[in-house]
Length: 125
Image 1 (tube, one colour):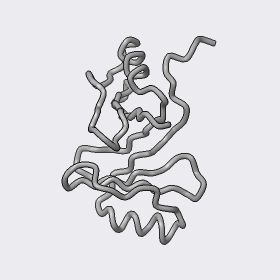
Image 2 (cartoon, helix red, strand yellow; image 1 turned 180 degrees about the horizontal axis):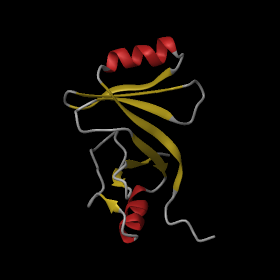
Image 3 (cartoon, rainbow, N blue to C red; image 1 turned 45 degrees about the horizontal axis):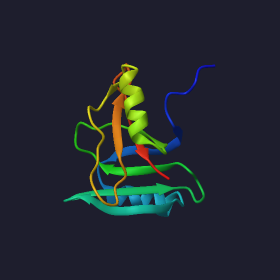
C-alpha cells in the first residue's frame, strides 16, 4: 500500500443545495430529530446551516440552491495547504489557491473528480 498523499481524516460535511433553507432546517431538526450545529452568515446575504444526527461526526450543510450547485462532499483535514499542494501535484483538478475568507472561517479548497463531481477539503481541528 502506498503512502497517503493527503491528511484527510474523515467525511466532514455533505453540502446539500436546498430551495428553502428554513423549510429544510425545519425538516431535518423537527421531523428527523437532527441537531443544528451551525446557523450563521458566512458572507453578506449567504447563510451556512449545518445539521446532524445527535453525536454524529458527519454533518449536512443546507445551502441555498443557486442553479449551478449540486451535492458536494466536504472532507476534514488538519492541513489544507499540504493537501492542496499534494492533490495539485498529482494532477487533480483543484482550485489554483486556498480559499481563505478570514477570521472564523478555516482554510479550504475545492476539487473535482474525472466525472466533474465537486469536493471540498476544510481544515478542522
